[in-house]
Image (tube, rainbow, N blue to C red):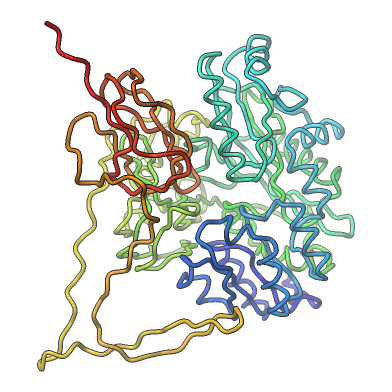
Amino acid sequence: MSARPAPRSITKVLIANRGEIAVRVIRTCRELEVTSVAVYSDPDRHALHVGMADEAYGLGGHTAAESYLDVDNVLAAAVASGADAVHPGYGLLAENAGFARAVADAGLVFVGPPPEAIEVMGDKLSARAAARQVGVASVPGGEGAVTSVEEVVAFGQAHGWPVAVKAAHGGGGRGLKVLAGAEGAEEAMASARREALASFGRDELYVERYLEWPRHVEVQVMADAHGNVVAVGERDCSVQRRHQKLVEECPAAELSDDTRRRMGDAAVRVARGCGYTGAGTVELLLQDGEFWFLEMNTRLQVEHPVTEAVYGLDLVAEQLRVAAGEPLSFAQDDLAPRGHAIECRINGEDPAGGRFSPSPGRITRLVAPDGPFCRFDSGYVAGDEVSQYYDNLIAKLVVWGRDREEARRRMLRALDELVVEGVATTVSAHRLILAAPEFVSATHATSWLEGHLDLSVLEPFGPPPAPAPPAFESGGEAVRVRRDVDVEVDGRRFSVSLWVPDVEVAAPARSRPRASGRSATADAEEGAVRVPMQGTIVAVLVAVGDEVESGQTVCVLEAMKMENQIAAGQAGRVSEVTVVSGQAVAAGDVVVVVEPPPAAG
C-alpha cells in the first residue's frame, strides 16, 4: 500500500480530548502537516498534550463536566482557533451525537461517523435491533429498557442467572453490574444508574444474559463515504477487571479461519447497515465456537495501536482522510496481518489483592521502556498529576513480535524496564497476567482475571520516595534555572520563559474544603471507617443508629470514574456519619464511625 498525502480540505484540527489520545492525534497531525489545537481544564494546564499542540485554549473548570464535556466551550475554542475540523478522540464527547451535530452546525468537520450512526449504535437497544436487521445475532436479552427491579428479576428467572444490567447509552464497562441472583438487584441497579449518568449523561438500563466464560473479540472497521467498508482484523480483549479491558492483542489467538472470516463479515454488515463512515469497532462475545453482537463503539478504540502494528496502518490518518471526503487508502484484499501485537494499559491503580483501587497523585518519576518493536503512548511526564477527576489511564505499552510468544516475552521485558513512581500502577498485575499458564495457552476468558487468577500475591503500593533537596551554589544562592510560565490571552495559551531560583515549591492541595472536621490523623478508634483515596461520595447507605455487619457497605465513593464500595471494618451500631452525598473527601478521611456491640455479661 502506498502512502497518501495529507487530507486536502483539513488544515487545522481541534482535539476535543486530553491525555494520551490527544497526544496520539497531535502526532499524526504533525506528520500530515495539519495544525493541531488542544483544549484543557484547569488541572490540565501543564499537561503533555497542551505543550505538544501548536495552539491551546483553556476551558476552565476541574471536572470533566465543567470542561471537556462542555459542548459550548469546546465549540467556542474551535471557532476561535480557526479550526476546520474537530477530532473527539475516545470517551468524553466522542460518541455524543448532539456534539457531532453541533460541530457540523458550526461549519466544522466532525472526524467521526454521522450523528445518525452514533445515535443508532449509542443506544444499545437500537444497536441490537440494527444488528438483528442485518442478520447478526445479539447476546440474548430484553428488547426494551428496564425500569424496575421486578423486571430484572423476572428476566433472570426466565432466562437463568447470572444476568447483566447495563447502561443503554455508553460502554467501556461503565454502568454495568452482574447479578448472580435476585438478591442485591436494587442496589446494583442504583449503582449502574449513577455510573451511567455520571459517564454518559443518561441513566437508562437494559438487561441481558451474562455469559460466564466468553472471549471478548472485537473487529476494527473502517468505512468511507464512497461505499467502501473494510474489516481491519480483530482484537482479543478478554483480560478484564470491572468489565474494563487491561490487556489487548491482535490478532485473536486460537481462532479458526472460518470464525475469523465470519466475524469480519458480520462487522462489515453492521457498519454498512447503519451508514457508517470512519473508524469504528464492532464488539462480539465468543463462546463454544458461537459469537454474538455485543455493541458497536462509534469511535477510535483505546487499543487501536495493536491493529496498527499488525497491519502497518495509521488509523488516525485514515480518519482524517475519510473526514475530508477522500476514499480509504486500502481495500479489503490489500490487508494481510503480520506478526502479533500486545497492549497493556498502564492505569493509575493499586492492584494489590485484586482490588485495583484508583491511585491519583503526582508522578515523581517516569522512565519509558525502549528497544525494538516497542511503543509507549502516554499523556504524562514526570511531575504530572494523575487527577481524581478523569480516567486513570497513564499510558499504553504496545509491543510487536513475529508470533504471539515472541510478543509476550517482549512485553514482559518492556514491563521490567518501565518505571513509574509516585502513584500505584497495574504493572505488577500485568506481569502476573502475562506469565500465567492460561494466558500463555490463550484459554482465558472475560471472567478469568477476577475469578480465577490468584492476585493475592500482589503487594500494596508503598509511599513515594522523598523529593530531592534544592540545589545551591557555593555562595548559598539557589541555582537559577529556566522555568516556562503559561499565560492566557483571550482564552488562548502562550508560554513565556523565566530564569528563577531552583527551589521546589509544594503545589497547593486541589481538594475542595470538607464539611467534616475529622482528618486522616484523627479518630484512631477501630470503628472509624476511612476512605482509601480522594474522591466524591455518591451515596451514603447508613444513618446514625443503624446496625451494620462487618464488611457491609456504608457508602459509595467515586474516584477516577469508578465506584468503590466503602465497607465497615467491624459489626456494631453507627454512631456518627460525617459525610453527605456529593461531598469531596481526601484519602484517610473518616466517613462513618461504628461502635462495637457492648460486651456480654
